[in-house]
Length: 419
Image 1: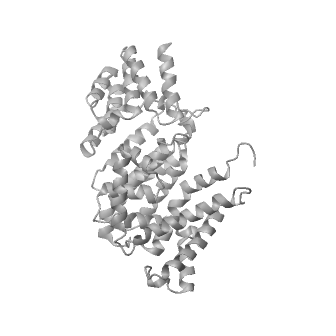
Image 2: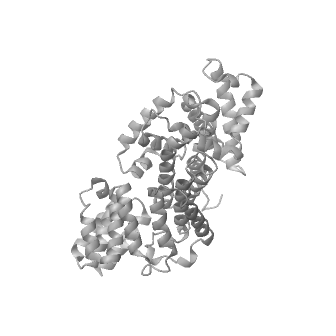
Image 3: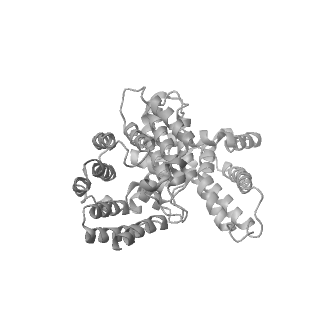
């Protein structure tokens, strides 16, 4: 093992992050939602086995090793559980058991497993917030802390949602049939919101070491485009969300500098943006115009397109972006939207106008807990000559930063202001 290679514990942790949710979804498809705890136990056993077996030598293909171990553990645990008569009758024979587990854990079935479980989790007996929390935990592999960050809530609230959701899922006997049009349409908003939060965690998330995780973004896009293959899904809305993902993902490669620090949009090298993803996003954006309903995803995709299409920050159509934010505030009023609208106003009407717009939402407690609000306020303070206030607000942004990439970005601005 070379000096820069990850050790077995780090490798298992990384696999747990990226693979455990997929394995849980697959096994839940075999066992049913009422056996979610059993599916989690099987995957946990496989991960512990990996950590023990890889202490001295790593396998050539860790993912394949983990998959095979999960299959073996699943079969062993299901055999034991069959004695208590708690599992589905179709798992009664050894042949049926092996076929079911092999099919469920096949790579070809992976995305379908995830999407089926996402729709299953969104049961009518639970709130949309609980739907999204459960999806992020069990299908995206988020920790309670990461989910809390995505919702801008405390972890205790998320823990309560997870407890309620688990209890309700235990009462379900089978996964939802995604071919039922009415139920797919009813549950789709929760799935889209969960995919949106998953993408955001990958685009600029709360992980202190890796705030930029392209794999999470790619997974969210993959599932959104898979949703388009379901005839019952609202294609225009899903196309809009897919467009948003593509257009933002196209800029991922330029969001960090050589030292791993976040770069503001004005300093990103636009020539390095992924043109194939931009074209893919534009195709989705065109397809989204076929519907009659204007959703938040349409508006956010429109904003992303304006940023992506502009040759520079100065040449950006800020009037159109501000108009999109005005409409978005009516559909989805929250502090983050209001903050971004204020920044667009600053570009369109001047820093003082933007600062006044931002101060209108300064009492939003959730917004105050983010470094972005204080960083935005500091930027506008500096632009209108309020250097002392700008320094205080940059210092507060540094204190609230969730990662080195965020912290150093604000420290650089603070140092520039002091000089």
